Length: 251
View (cartoon, one colour):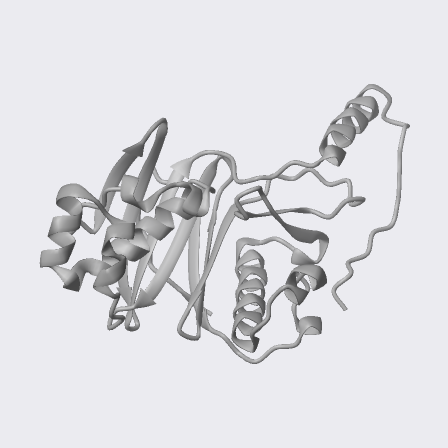
């Protein structure tokens, strides 16, 4: 695992971005892997990418100072991932928002402190993006610029992907509505009521884009309301307690 030297300035939130090659792994090697989600992948390549990204997430969390053995990965309706304590652990410590990516045998993971969201995407700098998909990425003056300057297509691609991930909406945020000023290593972009900061890096032959924005990167479930009520009851009566066991099914 290698750390990408990201710097959004002195007022930026705590942020950790890491990259690592994807190794051959088994499901039992990765505690943050979900057996049901893993079973949905058809190709061995996609399975390796999934396990590689989840293992790198575990390593990044350890570097952040968090024990991943009590965590699970959730997905919202747009399949954006978040981490949470497994049901039954009854823990309520704030957790960082996350983003995971992979390309060409490499995995990328970004963590940012709570109350922020983050997106990370990377592609080889030598990647050739077909001009046939340009009109899916951009429109108007931006499309014309891209057609005249195809050498910037990878930067535009990863930048828009990073913002889609930071928005936690994926392709439900139309990339044609995201305008990336080319040539700026650091960019501030507003889309509706969302305000993003975007940086692009060249790192070991990859173009890596990282976007952050104020927001919530946690996906609540019904147990969260119960936990809030339980914690309130415990604060009123310190002698009141509850206990249970929890297990992870990833074998």
